[in-house]
Length: 230
Ligand SMILES: Nc1nc2c(ncn2[C@@H]2O[C@H](COP(=O)(O)OP(=O)(O)OP(=O)(O)O)[C@@H](O)[C@H]2O)c(=O)[nH]1
Image (cartoon, rainbow, N blue to C red; front, side):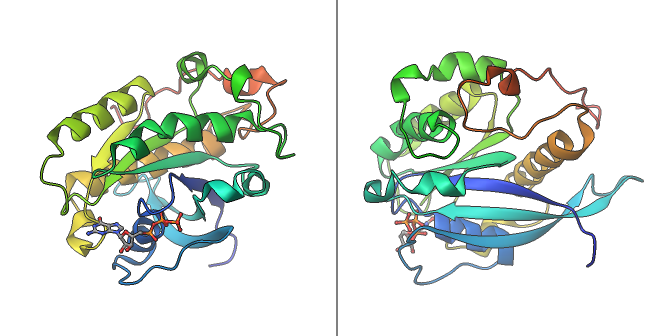
């Protein structure tokens, strides 16, 4: 296990959307029955096979930083943000507001001044950012099992993900089959982790995103060449 390189992925979304449940499922392949309310942040680690099935396959650690979503901790949680290499945005398919709030989460994580906890939402233009960024992101909708009228929200979640150049997944975090090997959700997630690792370790002149607005160059990284003929 020595010398395994790692990447840091933030897991962000409103309180109660299922970040801890999702993180557990990803890291341990089994659901958690009674997740505790996350105070501050908790970290789970997943071993990921980068470029699995190819001659250049390699194992990496993916650190999943599950950040407590309570608004009362908004001013302090930026200490967990820097530096990071990708973001999993989580929303609850039964709670439309949690989907709309993902834009606020993107603004929050990108708009703090160097982790000093100073919100500068007004200066942040998410559309401009997304257009110029290759920061790997994925949007995950939870509680697919609970929602009977979620077709609309599923479509909207797809739209937001598309706007951000990201994949989206809708799933039930209480069921380990949701990320069964070979399922489309597992494939999308694996592709996301591959992208995070590519950006971190295979992109020359890559600088991990910082939340320092004054350094816009950090976001203006060019498109990567597809490595898998995607
Ligand atoms: N039925 C169902 N319940 C879920 C699902 N995902 C999460 N839950 C439940 O939703 C509640 C909140 O889940 P958490 O994982 O603690 O949510 P969180 O986003 O980590 O919340 P904070 O720690 O407050 O930020 C728990 O009771 C979970 O069991 C799901 O896909 N389906």
